Image 1 (tube, rainbow over the protein chains, first blue to last red):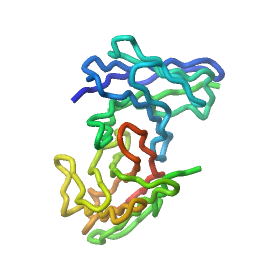
Image 2 (image 1 turned 60 degrees about the horizontal axis):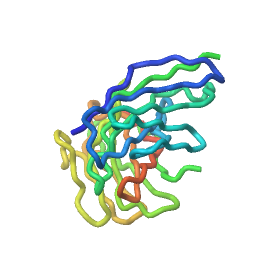
Image 3 (image 1 turned 90 degrees about the horizontal axis):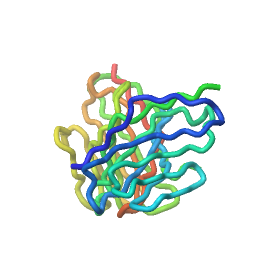
Length: 111
Length: 115
């Protein structure tokens, strides 16, 4: 099963961009790259996902390396509400849409 | 607004009690629902995958007789923790998806405390 590697923690300042990296060197051709985040005592929240091309939505941007072995979640202007654990997950087995969570990156945002 | 509703949000009960947790998809038909468990300061652990009208698929190490899952309709799945004991105390989270590579939508979780 393809796994992802993320830094345990990162810090950012409010209103500055944040780049959260994720390595997935054993990704298969059909694996989508999903990002979720979890605030304390809440269920995870979907952020963004993509396959090969870079993706943008109202929450973030996802930059995917050309060889797909790594990706970066970009928060354009961090706010205090963005402090959370961010999970980069590969979508195993398209039919079941199963997600296997790793340890994620704990993002701290300083005012 | 929330697309997946999970109830109750918190349960405190005595050892030996069976506890039922409901997960509802509010504005879409979820072909697949998932149940996770999360212990303090740990990541989410997938317990089982549930498809409407069929038996749930449990992950390795999860006791299916302990954690009963029913997915009777496209909008409702339930997890029953049978004869719960203190070691079952955890944060239980459900999610729903309409399948394929679409994102999962998560409930707010149920904090289960067994005394």
